[in-house]
Length: 167
Image (cartoon, rainbow, N blue to C red):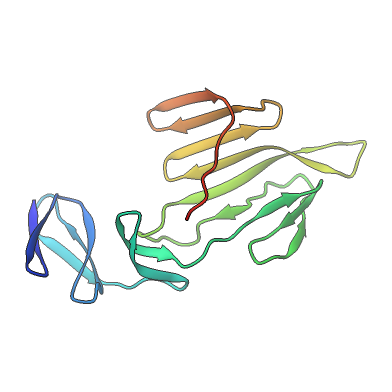
């Protein structure tokens, strides 16, 4: 454990824990496991982010949320409101993290498609959502069934998934 002064309080951080430090939270630090030294580098929140506490976690948080929709048979409405055709046999990605950011988890939302030879329509048959090391898989032909894959193994859940929007 390493102690850091926060105001007039001494706060302890375990090895490898990352945290914000500095009078105006302008440094991102971590405690080295082998040397027990605190290593800090200048940092700031990215565009569209603010520094603060959200649900008990201090760090960089998005100022707003976006929505991506698959609407109709082969149309996608992107985060910036544009409509895109979703046809063909190529692999598509609805959303994916760009670059490497220590403040945001890896995210990928990828649909699975079925092309019908008798129709120009492309149907979304499944959606895979990957966040860090966890993958959630939803299939159209298995309503109410959700498969979750983690580094610990695969689990399947039966029931209606409930999504809770951010406040």
